[in-house]
Image 1 (tube, rainbow, N blue to C red):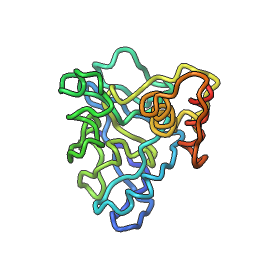
Image 2: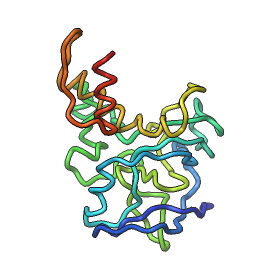
Image 3: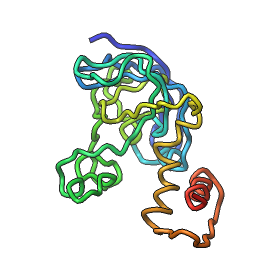
Length: 207
């Protein structure tokens, strides 16, 4: 299968990273190749520098579809998309209970060492498969993901930088208000820290 040579930010897992040439395969039947236009940087990206393993950094991103697999019907080359690392399998205990964000099979935050929806295949460094942060690795020029990891951006007013943080920072802030704190209308809230997540907590609480 043909491979695309591009650049990616790779950590050695011991606190260091460098920009290296990687190779990304073209999509298989249910996969999508995305050209990254913008990527967010989360505090978790800083933490992941010391996770003890080599991988491509980044789990927030937005871009344009470069190519789709033959079974992908409702997305096409040139579509603007947002990447999502929390893709449910749909059939595990948590998914059936409505807790798709902690899918037992695909979620990288459930404590299981799995590679989830984006899987290990298709991205190599020095001719060897390389892991990708939260199954995405958005600090690279191209990413190869399953169709379920892509959400179409239909807004012509949402820039790529703004769209890139929706998959993590925005939804973390929103979820903290709506699902964790369960803030009710006309309540007063205190937000400690107005970083990426904090600002989205404020926006969610305001609305």
